[in-house]
Length: 408
Image 1 (tube, rainbow, N blue to C red):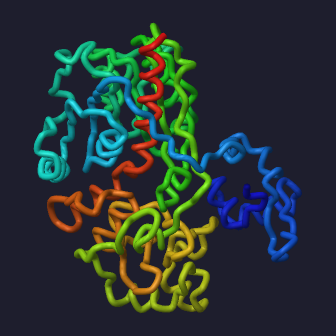
Image 2 (image 1 turned 90 degrees about the vertical axis):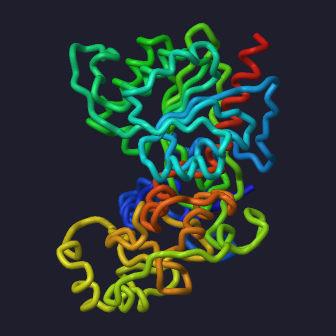
């Protein structure tokens, strides 16, 4: 059982910068201590109990969460992208009845890898799923975060018209599955001062679903070697006992970039060779000077100012700029474009962005999952995806609920 956490680990856990932790240390909100053996500055596990978001630290597991389905369960997925969520649900034991996606190259990826999947390439607004009413167990979707126009104190389904959440809720209403799950970026929690999320909860309530209090999940605790965060919105049909649903259980072990790209516990071989982007010569010259695990503050001052431009004088840690990854830590969250300024994700040893297959490994896609389209289209698909291993744990949580709900 881990009793101490480093400054870097706590910064990742709380999604704050090391500078924020140092400020908290000075004002007494959270004071680091000296670890007895190493004398490094660390935090005792007990100190972290003051943060509700770290509740999971006190009950992690080191056993597999696999749940065997009591019968065949099925899903419909909206905004399916390149299939990260769909693969994870499939690996957990849930059969995919239909997937909807508007992006052509993402649809090509889905079709080429799973010719038997029913991939519907169209705008979701044009599709009715009413033929699946009472025939599907879960509807999932990673809808974009869009504000609503409010009409009165209680937001209804019609108030969300024109947004993609409206389409998600409409499909849920058309099919009435026992459970629905929406996933999104952590920013949804505070979008429009929390009103957007409350509107979503209100709409799902209106169409017959009890919403479990949404929670932010750090995927590093779900066998994903990446500091990525997702929000889950889980709705349980009101004729069922919503107390039967349990969120995915976190694991004790955190995997690193080395686990992602080298043979080990996560993958049984080194990452395959594949194409990838390159840095322009000017950016490469700068990043050559950044050590493993370093970023713009590790550059000489004159180069910092020239490279950062106006950003140099802005407040905040800006820790993604001129950033070289470390083998011994999980990757920072991948973006849709690996070479763009301010979110560099430079390889630990070589001065280049991650390749397509390295990107896919960090998102825990299988090596045999091929992406369609140009290199930039492939990066976009992978960067937008739900990490497969996290999706698998979500799948087990769905199966666990359905198994119990079907025996009540």
